[in-house]
Image 1: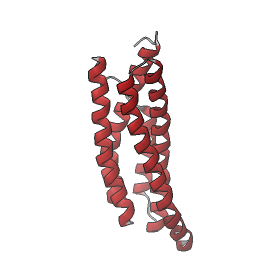
Image 2: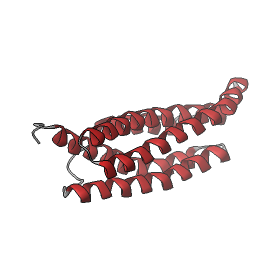
Image 3: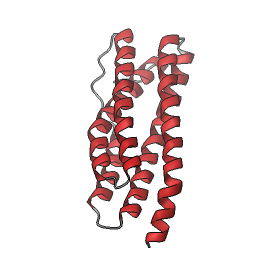
Image 4: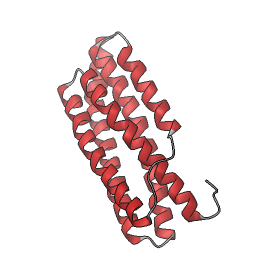
Length: 164
């Protein structure tokens, strides 16, 4: 694809985050299964449901733009998920592994926050009010998830510290 306009860039970045979210729907169940903390497991399961809604919002935007959502592989998400998979495969204390899972999940959240913030700004500049609103909804959810992970980390990191 040629990037000749902000709309071209907008579509390209939408495809990137669409692929990222789809990759995440495959990774979150594995992270939930690996979590020792019941609260963390439930958080990953809740985020999976949220991610599925976010994918639907992206599909709405693609439909309005009359473009296909496919065609881009998000290498950044692929790398972040690979890091999370490495943690799952490690041996160690439950609380320490949970702390590592939270760190991996927050890296994902921060990537998504950056992507959705950028996309929302592009949508506003392109005067795509519906798309901007949908992207803002997702951005708010991602920020809320990051905050929940931070709150979970306070207890789990303390447990991890005492486990060592």
